[in-house]
Amino acid sequence: MSTIATLSPRANPLARARDLGPAISAAADEIERTMEIPEPVLSRLHESRLLRMLLPRSAGGDQVEPWVYAHAIEEIARHDGSVAWNLFVANSSALIAPFIPLETAQRIFADPRSLISWGPPNQHNATAVPGGYRVSGEWHFSSGRRQANWMGIHCHVVEADGSLRKNRFGRPTVRTLLLPKDQTTPVFNWTTLGMKGTASEGYRVNDVFVPEAFSGTREDPSLRRDRGKLYALTMQGLYAVGVASVALGIARAMLDSFIVLAADKTPRYLSRLADSPVIQGNVARREAEMGSARTWLTEVLKEVWAVADDIEPISTGDRARVRLACSQAIRVAVDTADYVYKAAGTSAIFIGTPFERRFRDMHTLSQQIQSREAHFETVGRVMLNGDPDGTFTG
Image 1 (cartoon, rainbow, N blue to C red):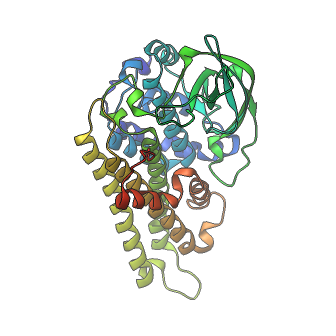
Image 2 (image 1 turned 135 degrees about the vertical axis):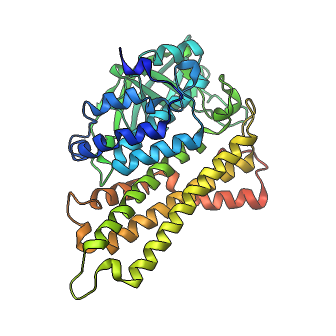
Image 3 (image 1 turned 90 degrees about the horizontal axis):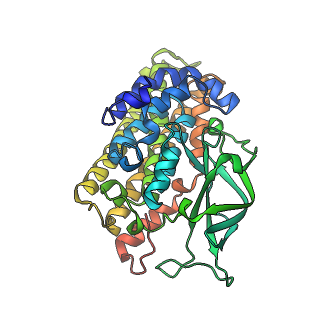
């Protein structure tokens, strides 16, 4: 009998991630070279249910607490950043499920290997037609597209009179359209510095019809069908949790590897790295900063969860706290990776070391929208002036 069918949904995701770690580490070179997650690693990921942590129970998911999700993603990232990234993206894409009809969500996720992949919104629009939408265009940065069997399209909607559909805030709404992957054409354009294994490629569609039932808008938490504290957090907030967790996992692996290196390496004309007071002090500071960032993110998620409502979205203040904790975790992780790479010297520059690919992965992650330094300014504005226009979504 399939493990997918028999595994307890409440089994510890962190323990499952740890169990998968050695197999992911062993496949890391192949994952980067082929931009695929090979078998049997992919099947084991599906069997672990780590791809369904944020999917609602109503659609066959596990709907775990956000800090449980974060720790599992972080653990996978210690072994390979690309796998962890695609894991976080698959879970984030599953967050559309509470915003579409239950029958649609159950149909999509009835297959235990179903995954949705998508790229961010761009200039392309969908046209409203009887029964649904027609859409053409090209989207990019679709992490996990090669493992997915469903694709999403985020776009504005043009009404029959030519106007853009508005949301309750009076702004053009962004609607998500879902369609089988075989209705899309891949665009092989993922030639990047790092995170190569994510294969975050593009895709295009040409005059495809998407039924109304296979669409929804995720921009307003109050519109969700599924209740529960997890979905009271904003989608953008949970995206940030995912990116922060990947960053923390990569940085943790680099720092741990440097401590091992320092015990053995004696640079020319210098003492052993582990005997250097400068190295000792810097390693201790990085450890403190990493531990503080991780603990604070966990604490914020638990505190927000404690007061979250089953129906109402979390408050603006709590959205700002989640965003700030995630931004701080990402900043600390990037700084730690930079320190380790520099301190390791030439030991870090060769392919196959514990540092080189992780450094490239971290500096690809650092360019993503969730890693923007501007998030600190946004949170500061909310802290000082509130959000009178209701535009801060997390």
